[in-house]
Every structure is written in structure tokens, then in C-alpha cells.
Length: 126
Image (tube, rainbow, N blue to C red; front, top):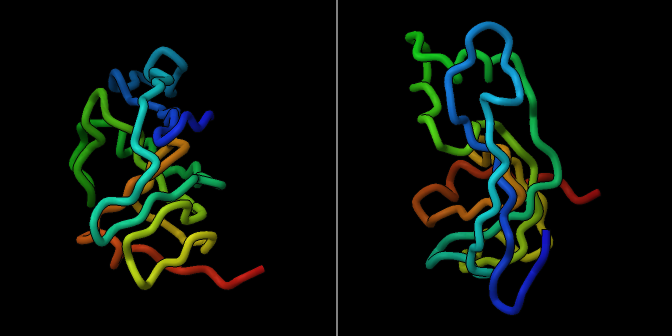
């Protein structure tokens, strides 16, 4: 991951096809996207430090009826994550603060708009 002036390179794992049987590498695409090194109005920008790889992901990859809608094809694979705030336009979240993010997905950076910051969980300092 590199910072270039006012932009960042965000590495993302995209679901590109529904797995048949166990998930395999060809079901995913590792993608690189240039994003602004800034937080949206009222929101935050996180750098992911940890991603939860959990059994529920298998269900989210399929079209089967579930408690959540399936991950859309060509979208970032859904996952909970922990990240550090690296840009903030929100008084609740300071730069450097660690948070749990239930909708961060499998990607290096997560842009959280103002209306979704209520879903972030601030973590205690370590």
C-alpha cells in the first residue's frame, strides 16, 4: 500500500463469482483502487489492521436466503475488521484511534460516511 500525495492505493478482495463447493482463488480478484487520502464530510477514513475471516462468509458468498443479502459480484468481500483512523471529519473519532468496523470488508482502507459512523465501535487504548 502506498500513499501518493493526497491519494492512497487501496487493495481490495472482490468476489467475482459464486463458489461451487469450497471457495477457491478464482472466485476472487485482488484489485487496486486509487482513493483520496481524506475523510468524507462527517466521516472517517480507516486503515485496516485486522480482518475477521469467519464461517459466515461462506453463506454471504452464495445466493441462498440468509440473515444478510449476499455479497454482490464484483464487490468487496464482506468482513468485520479493526482499523486505525487515519483521517477524520467527525468529532467522535480522532486520528490514531482504533475502531471495530462491521462493514469494512477485505480491503486495506475503508471510507466510512457520516451516516455509518454510528456503527463503529471505539476500542480501548492499548
